[in-house]
Image (cartoon, rainbow, N blue to C red; front, side, top):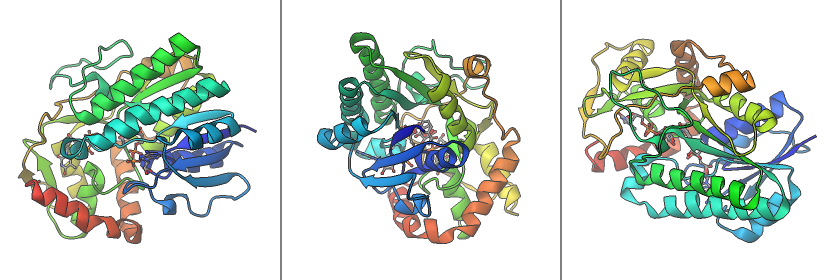
Length: 332
Ligand code: NAD
Ligand code: TDX
């Protein structure tokens, strides 16, 4: 049995990964999570004690990271500050967790000879033009736009340098936008679903023409598992499921699925530096590792997600008002 250290495992993608791994594999999991505003122990409630443990602490604390890395066979590093808008208001935490935290994880896997998988984002490649067929590949040049994406780009560079300079065994994945259960209501899709539950109109930044490439979180995490098992050290795998949609299209679909007219939304202030379009070419992941997404019909994954937020108001209600206050202060 493999023992995994999962950093950031109390957040959206990490907690879904822990549930996925405990269900689909015989791995045991220790989560290291700082339980910031985005980390919620409730995301990990009810998991089997003999295969799972939550340790509250930061990836920026080297002693703790060393101890946990030494005890594990492999590390899956999700921990990060993850929201672009927050990085525009206060970039400091992004530098600390995303760059320094990754440095401490790298030093630990180097010291104890452990395998690392580093979770990253397609945003490190910057933006693509609207209305073109161009997509990101592992060879795309780095060109991050926000403090968040710049901090993730820096972390990717550190991982590559530790592979090349110190022989660390590590892989990187850069994924497109995830959606699914347990995503914080600050993010686009949960914000609009919970707005509609509250009778508030969805909010589109700017024109709403910006395009994101959506993937269900379980498809993302199945890809991460494949990379962990079969990925070649030093390699980068792009994770995406051909899910390109403009933000306006997504809002219109949510409105339709939740029984509202397609134009019941507001345009609000745009995000400064807002990337126009992301799109992933996942050929390498599909051909080299045989991964295929299971959620190929976006409206079905979205419907499941809407149902999850409808059924789990107790989960998101405590974070909703404060999140909307922050948006209101920015005219968003
Ligand atoms: P999230 O904000 O929901 O979760 C992040 C988790 O990390 C939280 O549990 C938080 O408490 C924890 N954390 C924050 N700082 C920490 C620290 N110093 N030490 C330990 N834990 C800390 O984020 P998410 O959307 O689940 O993203 C997870 C990872 O996936 C991130 O690395 C992000 O860059 C990457 N990613 C996300 C997406 C997406 O669409 N959400 C897409 C591509 C890549
Ligand atoms: O209310 C909103 N209205 C709106 O139009 C919000 C919150 C967002 N948007 C737009 C901005 C983006 O074009 O929707 C799109 C998606 O926004 P976010 O959910 O903030 O995601 P994004 O900025 O694309 O980044 C996400 O995907 C890549 C994750 O938050 C990152 O962690 C990941 O790296």
